[in-house]
Image (tube, rainbow, N blue to C red; front, side, top):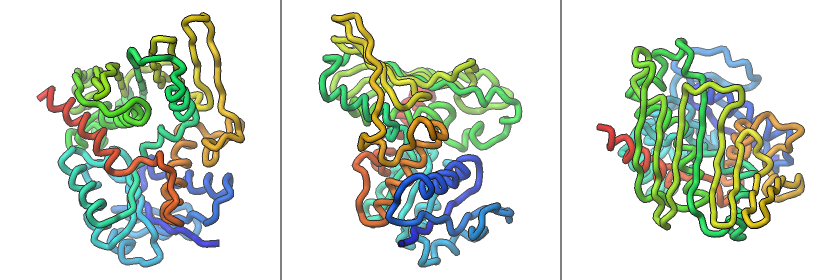
Length: 347
């Protein structure tokens, strides 16, 4: 069996999600290859608790290593561009955490680099792999709720209520943005993926903890799509609830469809004429579950989505066979442009 080796750049919290995705992928799915982390690049020596994984401080060591099939960028946003430049120079395929960069200018350069040099690429915009999202797309194609009137998509997190977050890179302007760039990038990508391209955005943001945060903690956006659909987006990193809000509702002339991201295996369809609600769940044998763990054995929607996204990119490395729903740099660039437009309104 062929081994696909890759190097993770950075070893923060998100990198550990990627590490877990590797073990999840190899154990749970019958892959035609073994996915293997060969190197982890850090700024300072780290005792990596993973057998066979080499910790290196010089990033060029992994670029020069012929056995490394791709690199996985898990560093702060403002470092992505320089890493991509070096990776392209050595012809390495690239899997990059979202957002693509800390600003649109760098994201555009990165996209041009990979496309002009024919570099295989993907971005971890992995919400699109949730089974519920795929079910929603099917129902929209079937015209289940008629013409689209509006949509509302929301993500409320609470982690930045903690004073311990003060001074971390995501609280600094150098990151390029706060809640909208960090969390909103997933939501904007989902809108593009399910409803169509966004043409224009109106945005307002807020910072409550000004003594510890330089960037938006809360963002509210009205979004205007090229096909005429209008809807709204809300993100927060400081809204605390018993049950986390992560949802997406689309309203049509025949009813509505709702996804609760924390339950990624079903959608709720409300039919106006019959005043009835249908809960539609994905079958374990459905092709959209090929690389997504079933409900009983799930590690949570966030982790399971990471696993599916990483497998789909590795398939591209293995035999040029990648799911057509994988997010490429050009897809992430579209979402980054909308966020850049939103932030520019606030200057």
